[in-house]
Amino acid sequence: MAQDKDQSKRPAKKLVHKYILEIRDEDTFEKKLDLRLSRLNVLTLLGTATIAIVSIMLLLIVYTPLREKLLGYRYVSLSRQAVEANFVSDSLAKELKLKSVYLDNIKKILQGNIGNTDMAGQKNVQLNTTQVAMEQANSERYQNIQMNRSKEDSLLRSEIESDKRFNLNFPQTESSNGISAGVSSTLFFIPLKGLVTDTFNFSKQHFGIDIAAPENEAIKATLDGTVIFADWTSETGFTIGIQHSNNLMSIYKHNSLLLKEVGNKVKAGEVVAVVGNSGDLSSGPHLHFELWSNGNPLNPAKYMAF
Image 1: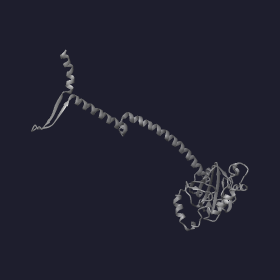
Image 2: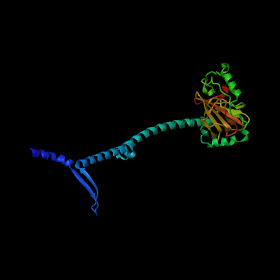
Image 3: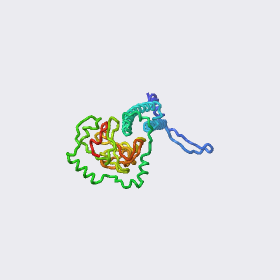
Image 4: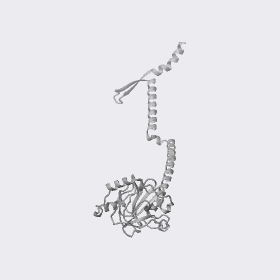
């Protein structure tokens, strides 16, 4: 019985039995280091070291880019990113297509190519409008132009807006006549005073009016809005287009100088360009002024007196 108890205690004694590990010099046998260890100590150290190494590796994999090196994780991640990129590219492609159609329509309007396929093949001359404007703005002939609305213009506009007798309430007719009932209550600022040399004619695809005036006269915005086009074309020269509220757009062609850039906010009566004789379709200093509503041309003479 006592012998069985001794045998059962032997494994436990072996675990805690101490051993001495000595490190001696090879030549002199001088003792350099000795360690008192047991099997239990060695197992504990090995277990602790293993747990520490595994924990560090897991942390590195989870919280560092090392996880990208794992074969399975990388493929799953790339697949998810590819799907997301595909959705984004499809959305961007649709938006780009819509924007392209919109810009093409605006460009056709500004160049006067609505319904005219004969002029589609003509070559457009692209210039850096900003650079030309900056160079010409330094010229002495533009120094006397008043860039902002005068106090008298603002006071007169406020007075007229407050008096309903001066609202232009025209009857509703077809857009081919250049009149829109939705615009008749809008008060427009006359962009340029001068002699009307050519009137609105829908059948001849003359979608605006021509106003002759001395060169270098100031051209003003007819309504508050945002500049959406400011560039040069071979046919209409320096041209500027302004988007207004209620889907209205005004276009000013054949200028000698553009004073605003795309994205600029303008107020009604603010100077945006200078009268000139630019473009192949111009035969003298004048302004070709167009007014559009929901993509339909309007007769400016129906809404303001030039």
